[in-house]
Image (tube, rainbow, N blue to C red):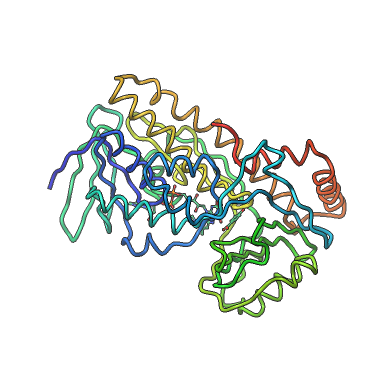
Length: 392
Ligand code: RFL
Ligand code: PHB
C-alpha cells in the first residue's frame, strides 16, 4: 500500500511525538512510524527534569496543561560531598529561572493522548522501516506491518528513532562520530515514597560513588547510584539499594530517605556521543538519533526538545515562507547547542563520579573543584545557567 504525507517521522519517542504535534499546529501533515507497541512506548521510564524551554515548547504544542499543573518547580539543586550538603540557588543565580520535575513517561503520555485525540496517523509495530531517495526531491519510507509491505511518499523524513534507530545507520558512511564511554553505570530505582528532598534535586559525590535524589511527584521518588558496568539488576535487592543510597548521602538527608518496594529498577550505561552532521538532503536526525549525553545534568530529553524546536521551525519556514534558510542551517544551529550540553554533562559527570583509574592527584583536584564551585559565585552561576538550559 502507498500513502503520502508531508513529513514522515520515524520514532514515537518524545522527539517524534513533539515534532508531529508542532507540525500539526502549523497545518503540516505527518505520519509517525514506530517499531514498538504503544504500551511499550508508554511504559518506558527515563528522564525527569525539564528546562523552561521544554515546558514552553510543550505549551506551544498544546500539551502544556498537565505539566504546568502537576510538574514540581525547583528553584535550587544541592551538591553533597564530604558528608555535607551545599545548596545552589539556581533561581537566584540565573535571574529567576527554574527547572520542572515531570517524568518523561508523563510527557510521552500527554503527547500520545493529544495525537490520538486529533486522529493523527501513528503506525505502531512498524517493522523493517527503511529510508530511500532522500538525496532526491521525493524521498520515501518503507515498512512492513502485519506482513504487508507499505510505502510512505513524503517531502521530508525526520529520523527521531533514538540511538539504536535506522535513520543514522542509513547514513553511517557520511557521518563523523564523536564518542566517550564511561567506566560505570547508573542503577535507578523508582518507588512510591515521598522524596527525601522535595525542594531540590540532590547530586552526591562520596567515596562510595555518585548518588542522585530526584522525584516524579510528592509521592513518587526516583533515586540513582553509580554502579559497576557489569552489575546486574538481580545483584541489587531493594534493601541493598536503600542501604547504599543512605551511605552515599550526608547523615541529615540519609535520615529523611523513606524506603519502600521498588516499582522499577534498571541499570543504564553512561555515554557521550555526537553524530555530525544532522542533515542529509531531505533526511534529518533529531534527539537521541543524533546525540547521547550521560544523564548527569538531565540534558538528554531537553536537547531532544530543542532539536525539535529548530527542526519544526525549519519545516514551517519551508512550507509557509518557501524559504530554505531554516533547513539549510538546522544542523549547524542544533549542533552548536548540543555541544554545549555535551560539555556540561561530561563536566558534571567527571566532577561527581568515582573513576576506577583516578589516582590521588585526580581525587584532590575533584575535591578542590567542588569546594571552589560552592564557594565562588561565578562558578556556581556557571553551573546554574547550564543547569536551567542555555539560551536558544
Ligand atoms: P527515544 O526516546 O529513544 O525514542 C526513539 C523511538 O524510536 C523508536 N525506534 C524506531 N521506530 C521505527 N523504526 C525503527 N527502526 C526504530 N528504532 C527505534 C523507539 O522504539 C523509540 O520509541 O529518543 P528521543 O525521542 O530522541 O528522546 C530522547 C530521550 O528519550 C532521551 O534523551 C532521554 O530519555 C535520555 N535518558 C535520560 N535523559 C535524562 O535527561 N535523564 C535521565 O535520567 C535519562 N535516563 C535516558 C535515561 C535514556 C535511556 N535510554 C535511551 C536507554 C535512561 C535510559 C535507559
Ligand atoms: C531523574 O529524575 O530521572 C533525573 C534527574 C536528574 C538527572 C538525571 C535524571 O540529572
